[in-house]
Image (cartoon, rainbow, N blue to C red; front, side):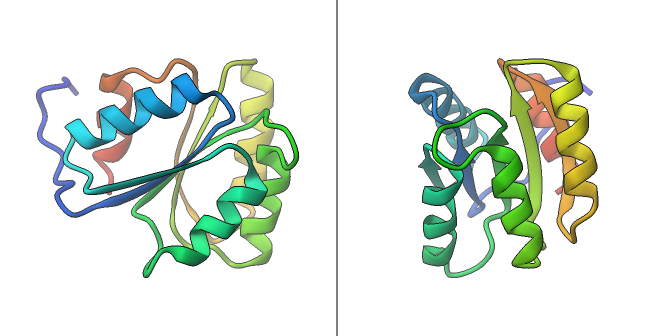
Length: 134
């Protein structure tokens, strides 16, 4: 699928959970360019759980890093499962494929809709492909 494919995202919302400010900024810009009307960011899982309570409805997509301070992505996933989170989820990591595989197995245990696990940096093309299923 090419990056010229139109993804119907107008009015969509997203939550980006990553402790790297540059990554958050890049993903926020990419999502806005794709038509997302609201993109919130959190620097760890604990902050993300607070932000999730502020959304009127479940965000259309949640993009989560694995390695973060305070509450990492694995702990955050466990909290999402415990809370029966049913939204769409993408995992990202700058580390390694094995970590993403483990996180994917945890995510698959929950009710969320898993869009994929990707190594950083997440390209526009990869993001468009993953969002093509929403």
